[in-house]
Image 1: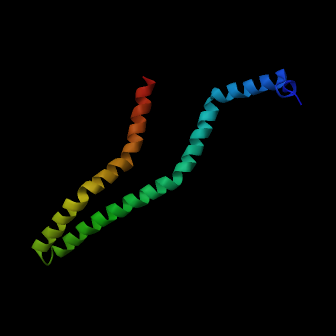
Image 2 (image 1 turned 90 degrees about the vertical axis):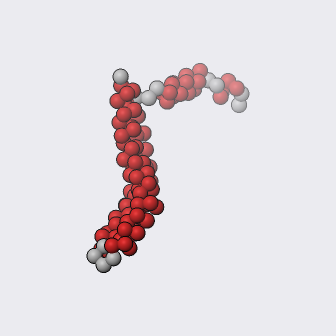
Length: 115
C-alpha cells in the first residue's frame, strides 16, 4: 500500500469538496444549528426561570408578611419591610435585569447588525 493509493486524485478532490461545503454555511444549516442550540438551552432556561421565581417568591412573601404584621404591630412591619428591601431588593432587580435583558440585548444586536 503506497502513498499513491492513499492520495488518489478522486479522494483528494472529494475531501477538498467536503471541506469547502463545511466552510460555506447555508441558511438551512444555520437554522438547523440554531434550533439545536435552543434545545440545548432548554434545561438552562428552566433552571434560570426556577431560580428567578424562587427569589421573587421570597421577596413577595416577605412583603406580604410585612403587610400582614402591619395589622398588629406597625414598627415590626416597618422593620420587616425595610429589612427585605435592604437585603433583597438589589438581588431581585439584578435577577430580573438578567432574566429579561438577554432577549433585549440580542434583539438590539440583530437590529444594529442589519444597518
